[in-house]
Image (cartoon, rainbow, N blue to C red; front, side, top):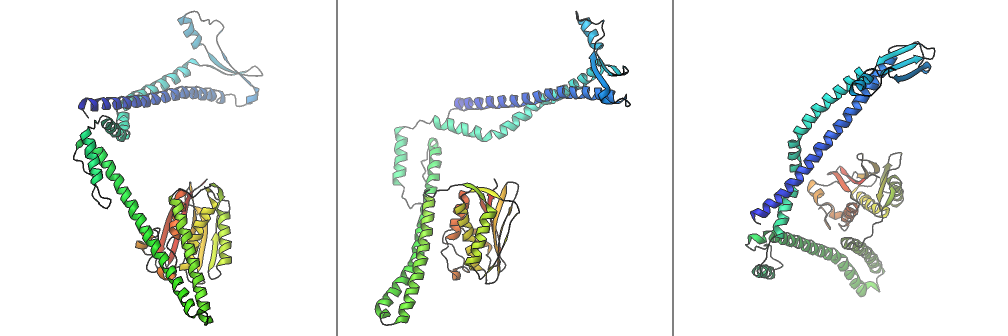
Length: 432
């Protein structure tokens, strides 16, 4: 971009800064002027009240008649007469019996109040005018990113790409191999913006491809085991199952278990695939977390009798805007994990509470095997299982599903875990 164009953009941005700073200073002056008038009125009212209450304590307020009077001889036909009228304004309080309680000139206190407010306003006005440079610096600091964006946008809009440069871009993109990690480099200053944008896009595409490949590999690995088990028992049935009832029963039980495991795994994979594709509908509604967690607690008592479940919540309802079915699914995943990694007859505590003025939480706490810090960092990755957790079975997808659900509700997790002491997981959501 030429220096003239750059200067033009900077002048426009500078003009915006000047207008904003001027508006801020005018707003301050207006506020101080209004407060000066208000202060004057308050001072006069306080003076009048003070004069009335300092005298005539023996006469009830309901027995008093108040008025502002002008001397009968006063008339307003000239500036001099106006002055005389103002200086003869009196505040009078007369008892119904006819006794004069207060009879005071108003001009002097009003004049003092006006002079005081005017002096105070003049001081404020002086500092308001001095603050213009401070406001300019403050607005310049705030608008600095926009300044840079405006210059860059102007630069992009004035780039003239010749046929040779178009050919260069096409050649570089065509020659780039999908598996290469190197980015594009045009070697042209005019194409730097395009170069950075395309390299950023390529990096995101490659990362997405890596995640997809890792997901497919992990899913294939997880499905391979139950398929191999089913195939092995099917072959054993074909050889000896007809004559040996023990082999028959064992094979049927194993095939049923592995089929159920594979069905559960496929359902989890489909849930994540639909979520990634944006095909999972979320229907937010006003949900009482206390009532929902009470339901999960009662379900856990019926389903799992080998652990001691406890539940605590505030007395009043705790409301959020959420899809109740999905949030309940996320909580059940946490409860299932806790029951899996906690010894029999140990406690699992469910609770609801307030995290802050704007946040509430759902909490599942256990006294299980706990996690290492390195495992906590990866616990939401798909198919991730720590070495200690592998002996407990599972697919490694439950927490990934829970995180997807919580992310879609603009929430987050708070995790505290210690090895051999247990794990506490909170789902934090925005309060209604």
